[in-house]
Amino acid sequence: MLSVLLLVLKIIGITILVLLGILLFLLLIILFVPVRYRLKVEHGDGFALDGHVSWLLHFLHGSISQTGRDRKIWVRIFGIKVYDSLHSGKAEKARPKKKSRIKPVRPEKQEETELTESDAMETESAKTGMKYTGNLKRPKDKFFSRIVNKVKELIKKTRGFFTGIADKVRNLVQSILGLRERIGRIIDFLNDDINRTGFRFTYDSIKKILKHVGPKKLKSTLVFGTGDPCSTGQILGVLCILYCFYGGDVQITPDFENKVFKGSHYAKGRIRAWTILVIIIRLLVDKRFKKLRMNYQLLKEAL
Image 1 (tube, rainbow, N blue to C red):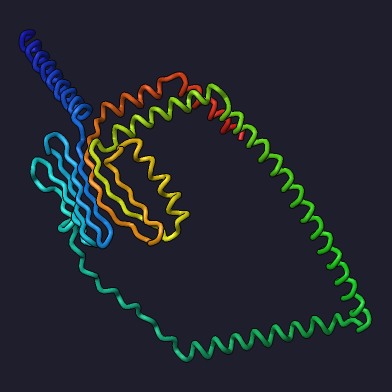
Image 2 (image 1 turned 180 degrees about the vertical axis):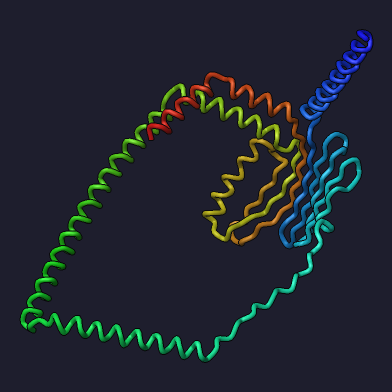
């Protein structure tokens, strides 16, 4: 009996170890096997897009292609197509709407309603006449009372007008003082040496992530112009930042006279989850980032 129990426990233990090994193996694959992507775009006279994403020797493969307005997206797993945008959903047949039946109102009921309303109006007019006949005032008293009421109403509106202006001015001054205090706190937060160090470290971490995610191979040719030489020059200055990362692989030609936007772009790269995870963990456990986050929470509460 004891030997059978030990054998069962042994089998359960081996099964658990095998499952843990499989999970560990899958986790390592997810972390270290990169996701590869390839993208090609052409625009100008027309628009064409061709993109591919694959993982684990095309175990998972997705693709998107578009020419003009015709777009196609599909996904394959082990070479088996599991999704196709062209055959994804069938249009459901429109169900006929039920016609709402309107019940006709009988003429008798309409006549009764009209009679009831006319009776009510006569009764109301009779009551109103009785009310005012019993409380008639002299014309002179009525005229003076109207003048007094108008004067009181005018004084009330004038007082409310000036009171409203005073309240608005007071609120505006308080808002300006409060805004000035908030701006001062924000400037102190940005000028603090500890916060500057945290900002610099955070910026470097984000830069590393973007560099890893960005394409390792890039070929881009762009011809653009806004029709305005001033704005074209400003955009050119912004686009020149790409030269810092890709150099001669990016060719930008400005057109200072015509309004144009055409080009051809090809990008290829890979993304590894382990690299991004390491950068994020280093950022979260770093003392500079923790101090920056704590100071930001204090600033948020103060504002």
